Every structure is written in C-alpha cells, then in structure tokens.
Amino acid sequence: MSGESIYPETVEVAVRLLLDMVPSDEQARIAAMPRDAVVELHWGLGMWVRNNLGLWSSSGALFKATGQANADDASMVVVEAFWQRLRDTLPKLH
Image 1 (cartoon, helix red, strand yellow):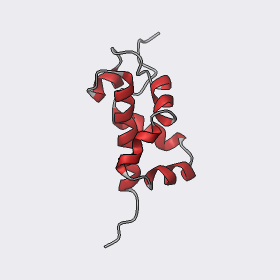
Image 2 (image 1 turned 60 degrees about the vertical axis):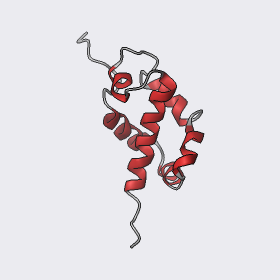
Image 3 (image 1 turned 45 degrees about the vertical axis):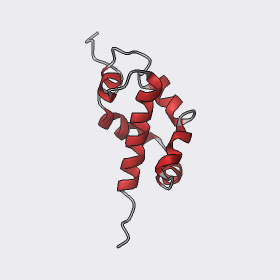
C-alpha cells in the first residue's frame, strides 16, 4: 500500500468532488441559498462531508487544510466553499 490518502487533501479538491457528485438540481437549490441559510446544510451535506471525506481525523490533510478545530466546523468550510463556487457560476446581472 502506498500510504496515499483516499480522501481529498485540499478544500478545492473536495469542492470539485462535490461538483461531480451532487445532482444539478440540488446544486441549483444550494446556489440559490442566501449565505445565512448555508448553515442549514450542516446536517445533510455537511454530515456527508464529515463522514465521507475524512474529517473525523484531526490528522487528515483536508481537516488541516480547513484550519478548523473540529469536524463540524471543518465540514462547513467545505460546504461554504462549495456554495461559493456554485454562486460564482450563476449568471451575473448588470
């Protein structure tokens, strides 16, 4: 075994993984959320991120990359970065 992590090692890679996995209709719903509503994703998407991207290990690269002290806060860094990426892709109205 090579010792390489099976988990994303950066927030950017985790966001790209979510872009590939989350259905487009759900992406549209998340993109439409105001910033203060993103916390509502804590128990759904946030839980999935915590449980499947290695955030329960404080020694994991992704956990460290978030700069947070616990898995809950670390997952929200990923979720908020995902939300921001989705928002950035929305058409801009001038």
